[in-house]
Image (cartoon, rainbow, N blue to C red):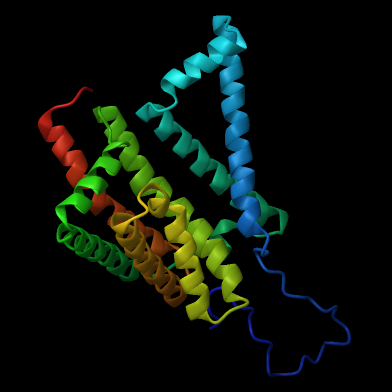
Length: 277
């Protein structure tokens, strides 16, 4: 069985009809430039949609450009705006991936979602829970100042209402695992795996995966390095799981379970304290 991203090996048996049948060349589902093209297309689509929404809002309320800009400055850091932007971006990423595959004659199911046994998905869920618990235990033994910094950073995007909490769960448990696995393990790992040994491809993908979470940019000290290291380990496990199963389904399940366990304590504490609906 070829590894994730590898070209299928040519048959050892000679093709008796080779002279009569045109040669069919292997067409990869993804090209190397998809690594940049997919996020660029998604960001462009998100910005265009945002601009269209802003234009409609300005026309409906008779706002001038300075007034529209002032209104945007008032709400751009609001939790629902941040969550809404993330949802739109994730949908745009998924649409870009599906569109590129369709242009090449492929579908998501045949390239990324091959069926796997239920027990494999269940094992992936358990692995996600275990890894999340281990990550929380590791973070709990860090110095108090480091823990305080991480809490302050995470509180910036914590929900304040039940509706926002529901949106956060949709993003963290459904959209993020699905779309991030489609991109990082479905495209980046697949493309690099066709050019590098699997260990190298997995490591590069995990580093990219970790950097894109931005912890080193928002907390460029011990906290940022520790969180980035945890995500790197997660990325390596997800890469191995994808290669072993030959499908993104177990990786998505593990990623969803990991995120669910990490986010539920904060959301539970918020709900226990009493919040708006």
